[in-house]
Image (tube, rainbow, N blue to C red; front, side, top):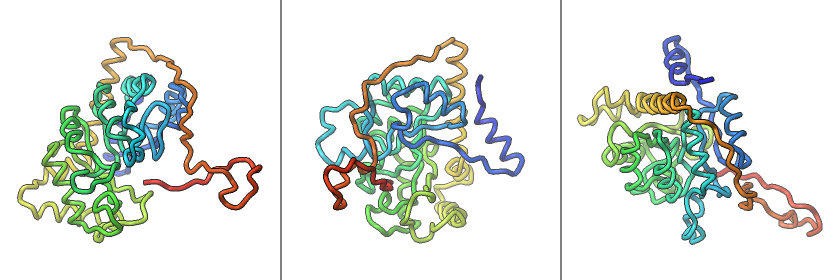
Length: 290
């Protein structure tokens, strides 16, 4: 049974309501099972971020780009490519925020539907591995996808301070490289602790859009695309691909990934790191990564 999320967004907006997406941030949540992915979709999830702040056995994350561990590692294994194809078949968004550059390229080569970067800025302006390089932005435009600019200062200026103008610089850069149809807003207020001056919370959105309109190169139609129409277009195309695959009777598959040896757990350390005896069992230290 198909669930039409695009139509639900339009209906909610017409009723004066706010549509809120359910997403799964991190492919480790699948437990190497496409059946689990299908269960997430059935429960209402509509996008999957392929990795979070650690590699899985089938996809490389952005963190590894700070060293040489990924030099010979493909961005996606065969199982990882199967995950992308299953997302296409389901009509679920492929989210490439948090993934490595190799994974970005591999996913764009594999997918048959537009992808998103739900909260990633331009690497040309802030050289963070969490941001999107220009060559990927160009391929994103060919794919029909969208890069949504976050407001976390460390992705905007690579330090703890930023301004609304710094955010606009990223929006304008993505617009210049990929085009107006491929840029959006992905603030991330629920997961950041440093915000730009002038964009402290959602009440500042009107100021952002008004400041953009002060630039004569921005039109009201452009602002509408940035504020949401681009994302709606992507959703509509993703569901169109799903419908075409259903008509073609493309069936689900159940590829099996090798056991996950990536230790994709956040800060897995032996308990003696906090002074406990070495004989104590390991424990998990949970840290927040952006």
